[in-house]
Image (cartoon, rainbow, N blue to C red):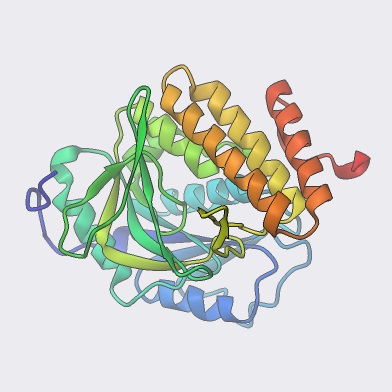
Length: 313
């Protein structure tokens, strides 16, 4: 893909907004939000914390806070925020997690990048990222029909990468993508919300493109890097509940998109094996997490979606 095509005109930041989803935020989250607010026209913060958080006057100026007073899941929160911005004269939205720290010029850099890809048409753009816990560079999947391969950004001067998946945080898309693809899947609640949306985009001919020239600092769980019989294993140290959602929703995405993308089934099964080995050999609460994985498989196959029913746990 040639990155010199398209239009490199300055961005109209008056039409650019951002959604930040928060859950029991720490003190540093306010400064993260202010950094984002300085680069866009409007920020919609959607807080899924059970108890209202004291934002200390952050709500105002170009920041709107929606307090759900309950954990409604990341998909629902994203839908709330994106819908609000598109209803208020915003044409393009950036999505962020609460712990994402953006560098100066990030929003305009992503917007200019998307402008250079105007020849592609509607697209979902995302930055390169590094996991701050394991200090590892992101890798991205490119799906063929029966095989997939892993690709990396090889440097800032490299062309954009066309991939099949991107993490939610730092993603940029416009009104046309939202109108063509619709809302994020509320019933997924959390985990694989981004995977499902990216596969839905692929089915509709909307590419996912990585901007190798911008790097986002991002945290994936509490990831570490370990070795098992000489093989690198990356335990994420997610809670049993998150293990359940990751497994259940991964099964659902496989069932819903496996016929169109058989290679995604192979990729997902490889990840499931990797994550199960990480739990068995390197993580705490092993038994609870293995039970959660098993429940996730059963509920995924049955199609039991929405918030987890933990009453029987």
